[in-house]
Every structure is written in C-alpha cells, then in structure tokens.
Picture 1: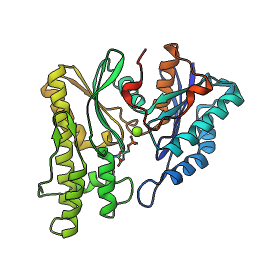
Picture 2: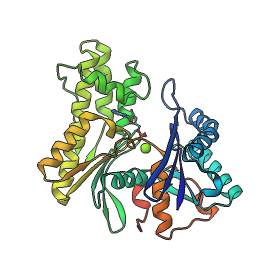
Picture 3: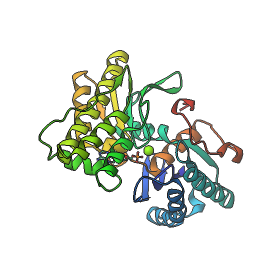
Length: 323
Ligand code: AMP
Ligand code: MG
C-alpha cells in the first residue's frame, strides 16, 4: 500500500510518500516569516508551494497518482487558514484521482513517526514543537495528556525570544548555537505546576534582561535552554517515575536540540528506560502524516468527504487509537 501524506498545519508544506514501512520521499518547503507566523501569509505560502512539492515528491519516488492508494492530510490542530488550504488541496486530489482520503491528527503523527523510527511499543512521549508541549502516554486507546503547557509552547517561547533579540525565525536552532558560547548562568523563572508547565514568565523575564543589556545574549540563550529544558525534563521524570515506563520518546521540532536530547537521555538512563528521537523527522513533515494515515486505514478507519473538515483545536486525546 502506497500512501501520500500532506502536512500543512503552520509553517511547512510537507509531502511524504511511504510504501508500508519504507519511506520513499520527504519533500518540504518552509515559510520564513519576517516577524511571527502570519496565518494568512503562511496559508498563501502553503498553497503556492503545494503543487511543486507534490510534483517533486512524485518525481523523487518515481510514481504517478495512479500508484497512490491513499491520501492523508493534517486535519488539525493548527492555523485555520493553513489547514483549510491544505485540506482543500487534498480533497481535490482525492476526488480527481479517485483515491481514498483520510484526515489525521498532527500531534498523534509526531508520536507515531517516533514510535516507528525508534522501534518503540509503548513510550512515554515528550512532544515539543512550536505550538505544543505535552507529556503523553497511551491508555485505554487514547494518547492521554499527562502534563502540558498552560500557556505557550516551548518552541513558540524560543521563537518569540528570538524575535525580541533580533534572531531570524525559527530561532530555536540559533539559540542552540548561541547557548554553546554562554558562560554565566542567569537565573530565570522556573515554572512547573505538578506535571504542567508555563513558559510565558520566562519569556518576559529573559526579554527584559536582554533589554537592560546587563547579560550577554549568549548567556541568556544558555540560561533559557538550561532552565526551560530542566522544566521539561523534571516533568517527564515525574511522569516516568509514576508510570514506571520503559521507553522515553522525544519528538516535535524542538527535539532537534542536542542539549535537550542529552538531558532527557541522561534522565531516561537513570530510570533504566530506553531513549529515542526520530532523527531527521522531528519537525513537521509529510512522512509522519502518511504513516498515521496508513495506520488508520489498516485499522479499518474510513472517512467520507464530510469527515474531512479541519479542526484547528483538534486535541491529541480526541483520537481513538485503534491500531
Ligand atoms: P515543528 O512545528 O514541530 O516543526 O517545530 C518547530 C519548532 O521547533 C520551532 O519553534 C523551532 O524554533 C523549533 N526548533 C527547531 N530546531 C530546534 C533546535 N535545534 N533547538 C530548539 N528548537 C528548535
Ligand atoms: Mg508540529
């Protein structure tokens, strides 16, 4: 079975094609905002880049639409205009080429690509991206949210700090580089509430400290990472100790960060748990959408066109995991 997955929840249009467990292609085009992500501009970017990304993906895989058995797309959560643009494109392709269509939850896709690439059965997952920060565990056929951010996602916090300090979007990788040159730790608000987290106070405080000019940007990036990643690791550790799980998965765009990988890896090791990151597929991509579409289809899930309406607030625990 060959599945074509289309990702388009925010900044990236991604086309992935898989044949069962084999990844045939992974094409991406990413919108570069001048300031923060502007939903309408992002949607326009996705629309303008969908056709060429599709052509490139099919060419790389050496396939035509006649070879595609299933089209899956990101149904939510995400920015409304982006979701609608991509869903409209996916429906048009499905109708025109008479290929079944399935809308999938973007967050569940981040987990499933991690499970697949790390060979995990039942991991405790820390999912860290621009808009989302969640600690999840599968229970009674749903990925239950054990803890999450009470305000902004960790990636959003890093990107906003970057915007205030003149770093280009996305700031996460630039903050990681600058942090390596930091020497002095600057105290910043550390906000953990049980298994939930909050990142807005640390953002305001670090930005204010930058404006006073007393601390170098390198020191602030270093301290921002150390503080916020310690919060993430603490909350995941609390869940791990409580649930006594044997696998820890780190996924989502912020999972690219080597320092976060190191902290989470050490913590998992201390608890005798395996640790994994879906390297190369942490950030938004079409392959994870194809993979989840394939899992759902094989589990017997079918959708009519009416079922493919987008849902900007689609929660991870709304999805019944039947695979
Ligand atoms: P996603 O929406 O899953 O593609 O994740 C995007 C987010 O990941 C953005 O907020 C980026 O700043 C962040 N990100 C990407 N690479 C890194 C990195 N190396 N360190 C920290 N954050 C990163
Ligand atoms: Mg994402």
